[in-house]
Length: 223
Image (cartoon, rainbow, N blue to C red; front, side, top):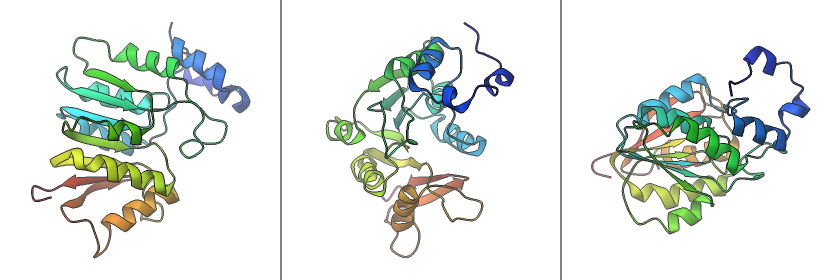
């Protein structure tokens, strides 16, 4: 089923556009695309970091827009791990917003089922639970875009960064509030500022690149 043209979608009132059940059906059937929560600059940085990666972990999938970006640049031999408990998550999404697992799986599956697509592994759970059960396999990129409250963002960093090897990256979304040309939210920004800016920065990690809402941290060979 072809998606509705953007010109028609813009005419839909917000109360209909944001209705969880209607969105689930529309996204799941391909009537509308997944809602994009990232700017063009954010998307370009995410794609550049994921390209040539062997294993990517995305924390916070929502309707799957950013997962599709990663899927498009990964090789067939790569793995994309998608983590989201789904449903309404006040620390991660606007009030009244929620994603439906069925719809997101269908939206991602339509694009990631080609022979050239990576292996997609779904984790319908909170990221901390997935990290605690992680077998220790190395990860090239962790995209932290789930819980946006400071304790949740810090927990994602604490639990996931040990799996990232030298030269790998952790990418924080919404982490540039108050930075020149930046945007973001208090939680992710506070974690990045405390850990990576200033004289007390975490050793072995450096800010590799930052654009709009995103900050990419790279693990050095010595880290």
